[in-house]
Length: 346
Image (cartoon, rainbow, N blue to C red; front, side, top):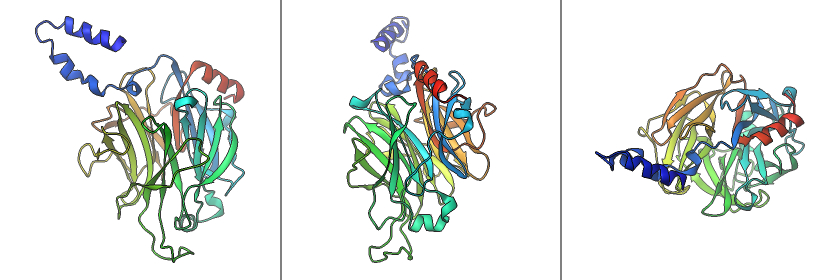
C-alpha cells in the first residue's frame, strides 16, 4: 500500500511528463527482498576459518553490513561430531512458510581436510550434508549428516539452500562429480563438477537430486542464490576451471532461463570462491557479496545497486575481519542480535 501511495504521489507531482518516472523506476522488478527493512538492525555471519573446520559466528557492529565481530570470544559455536568431524562452507538458511521466524538451519560440507587429501576428498569423499537447526538463532541442535547422492558421486561440497515459495519447500544446491557405475573405487576419470539440486521440507529427507548447473567440461563448484522479488533471482557461481566468480539472472524462477549480465565472459572477480550474497538492511536495492580470496586472506566484501545488471564494486574492507572463509550472512533483528551477544559474548 505504501509503495502504491508513493507511485501516486510521484505521478501527481510530475505534471509535464507523468508517465516517464514509472518507466524509469521499473517497479515491476522492485520485489520485497530488495527493500530496506527497519526491523532488521544487525547481520549474523557463519563461517569457517581455514584449517579450523568448525562453525564460527560473527555479528555486525550495529547495522553495518561490512563490519563484523567474532562471537563466543572467537571460539567455534558448532563443532561437528559426525562424519569427518570437520565442517566447511557453512550456510545459514531462514525458515520459510510455516517455519518463517520460527526455525533456522545451518548446513555445510562434511570435510576435514587434515584427515585426507584434496584428491581423495573428491574421489571418495562424503556424500552427505551436515545439518543443524535452531528455533532462536542462539542454540544449535539436532546435528545430522544426511546422504543426498548415491555411490557414483565422488563428493558433496558447499551446500546452499533457499525457500522456494512456488513449491513451499527448500531448494538445496551442492557440487558433485561422478564416476561410472562400474568404477566402484573411483579410480578412473570423473565427470566435470556440476551443481546439483533437490527439495526438502525438513532437511531430513530429500527428493531425488538432479543437475541444476552442468556446464561441462567447465567445473562449477560453488553457488549462492539471491531472491530479487517477483520470481526473479540472481545466482553466483565459481568457475573452478578458470578460478573466477560470475553471476547469472533469471526473471522466470529458480528453474527458468538464466542469462549472464555482460555476456558469456563477464566475471565479478578472479582468484575467488564461496560467493555469499545478502541485501542491505537500510538502503533499498543495495546488495552485498562476499568473495573468498582462498589463496590469500579470505573474504572481501563487494556491493551493488544493480544486481540484475551484474555491476559489482569492491567495498571498504577496513572493518571486515580477515581470514573468514566460505560462509554466509543473514540479516537479523535487534532482539536476535542482543540474544546472540548475551549467549555468545564477543
